[in-house]
Image 1 (cartoon, one colour):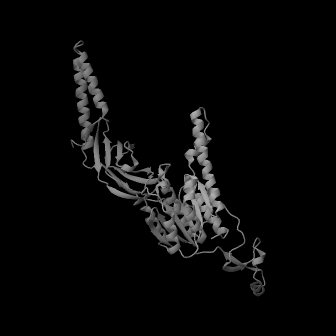
Image 2 (cartoon, rainbow, N blue to C red):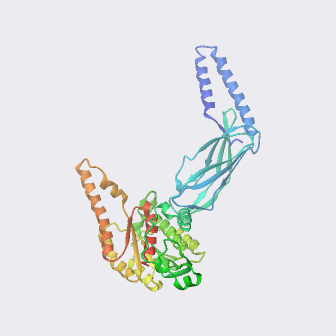
Image 3 (tube, rainbow, N blue to C red):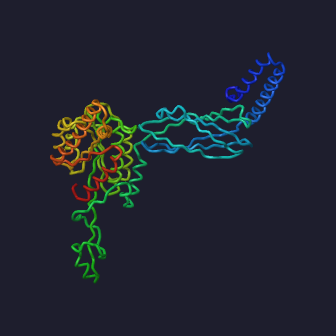
Length: 441
């Protein structure tokens, strides 16, 4: 009881007032009795408040309910089940010991709970790094009806939650892809050039069908126009190549470029599986780290998710020649390779260009790298001094070099995407669907 007993500030304020009146009683003796009466009433009130709060052994109950895993970069719900077992209303202060990764040392919720009431308190957490997050105890401070003291309840609620790549974003894109509503999140419709030669079925002609696909033999049998229906080619191999070198450790929006690339890889792999293609994964730095063979089994998505969860950069320079060696030996069929990397200078791109050209000779290579939005902000900023002019000029130079990289890749027959990290997922899915629609794979 002693360890869970706390006096509120108002008790100290009233006691301090009584002390001041005691001092004044040296000059006005009648105030001595007034001060004594104040202290007596305060003591009685504290005792009554204590009897009400400590009179019930288990007057309050709290329990945390959360999922076994969180999604990085997204708002994840955490629920606290609260139950007031006192017959009267109480004010409650709740401190949930959330994981240290959030660095929130002032987490506090204050609510009022009616007598014998059960309620749920929901709050959101947004992790920005992958890994294991540990929740600890729930501390609840129950204030007495007279608001003079509070009792602390500590509920043991230690649990570990794993933070995975953004599976919430993946599910959202999957739902839209299944219902053909991807344009709601910015995915554009691309006009199909020609048509696929993968036959699906024979159906009745409706206005808008290509008259060149009329099946005359079926038309003669049915005595009505019948057309061949073709579908997009399936079972094409899509590999996400994720660079884990030091250039991917650059932070943006609280997350690293590597985390943005991992989230985009997860979404792209899932959309590819929805489109009946085979999805695979390669992560590399100075050496090959992981290789997930492209497949479209029901377990493939979970395998890719678990693999991406463990990826961390080791701050080494990436070896693109070794990457080409692995691709040449282990990927035998022509595939779409989506390379998530970053180049901050034209020289760094030219240094890796021989390896990229070798990869593009055997496969369709799509290079995805990042626009430096901080430099863009500096380049667009109005200047007012000579120093700011120099900064603006340097920022414009680097921004121009990024555009030169896109041109350099295009001149070597390698499609590319230069994108801000927040638009990475939409732009990558857009490009994949465009390449698929134009039958470039």
